[in-house]
Structures are given as C-alpha cells and as structure tokens.
Image (tube, rainbow, N blue to C red; front, side, top):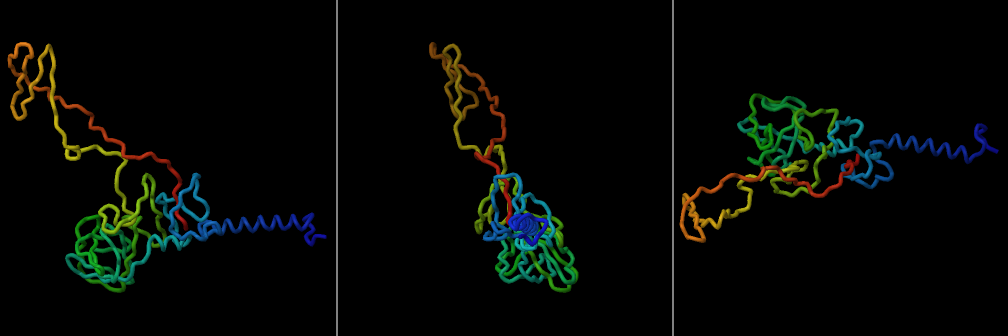
Length: 280
C-alpha cells in the first residue's frame, strides 16, 4: 500500500517526482553545463538547425549578458592577460611579459589606482604593429591608428584584458557575446593581415571591381558598313578605313561610348543559414 495517500500507486509518485526533478535540472542548467553538453568546452561554437539556442548555449548575436549569470563564458571571452606597466611617454609603452598579443587585437585596462592621462579604464584599445615585441606593445584608440600618448602621474596596479568582441566603453558587470550574423567563420593564422587576430572581420557580400582589379586585356575595334572595314592602327590619332572594293582610304572617329553598368558582383557562395550558438 502506498505511503503517499494522494497517489494511487508508488509508480505514479515516482513519475511525478522525476518530472519535478527534471524541471529543476532544466531550470538550473539554463545557461550552465547540461549533461548533453558536459564534454563540450565553454566558448565552443555550435551550429543548430532550429531557431532557438538550446539550453547551455547562447546565440552569437552580439547581445549583452550579466557576468554573474555566465561567469565561465565571460572569463573565456574576456580573459585577463596579466598585470601591465605603462610608461608616461610619447608613445606610451605597455609592458606585460609574454602577452601574446598581435596587431589588431582589442584590449581594455583596469587599475586599482589611477591610469596616466590619455588612458581610461574599461575602454577598448587596439594593439598596433609599431613597437610590438614579446613583452611590450603599444595601443591606439582606433584600429591601425596612432599610438596613444600618456602624460601626468599614475598609481596602483594596472591589468590588461583581451576583449575581441567589444568596442568603445565596456562594462565590469556585463559582457557581449560575438555577433556572427552575416559572417562565415574562418580560422586564425599567425601573421595574417586579415585573419591574424581572433574576432577580426573582413570581406563583403558584394564588390565592384576597380580598373586596377580588371584582368589585363586588349581592345580591338571593328566597323562594317557597305564593305567598309576598319584597319586598326595602334597609336594613331585617327584610324584608316579601307574600302575592300575600291581600296580608297579615308578616316573616321572611333566610337568610344563606354559599356557596362559598374554593378557590384555577388561574393556569396551557395550557402545555408543556421543558428550559430556558443557553449556557456
């Protein structure tokens, strides 16, 4: 006989209990590890056939989330590189042993005291190629821009964080996931001007060729009317026409009306879209 009078059998009680526990697991695992994703590292990209992000993942749509809700993903996407010393100079030199940064990388700084003038905490800066060594780097306010100049005094301990998916002011309590809309993912390659920095974006859906991008080619002009043909004479200011019947030379101006529409051509290969998510 059941010890639970509101149930007709022990089986019914166990079924309801299991359903309740499963609901709690689903709720607690939302944005956290779930059994089906337990072996997948935080920060892994996954493609999904459906419209929504499965439990334990987030869409990579550039949305902002609380660090407290997704601490593992926040730490993965915005890792601390280390402590950094900053020179008060023109240009400012940032020293951090083994920083592993490359040109184009985005970083931000924090401090326990005060940064020198010319710098602000929680503001994204860009690593530039000039002055880059294994243990030192320079920063710019824009990608490939001029090196930052510092002045005044500073205090406290400064730290530098990698932040490839944010720009401008960043938050200490929120972080942004990558925005992968309209992009095809490609691997990074050390030293590549386009793909050397994680998070960098390049390319366009369409492109209009410039004159320099057109293949080298030769124009040949032709004219035919009542047995008249053009005898093309490269380099001459006018072209000689020769009547095939009487061989009487004469001259006429060439038709130089341009053709073509200068329309951009499609760069997109045959594709199928899917929901791209990131493991939390």
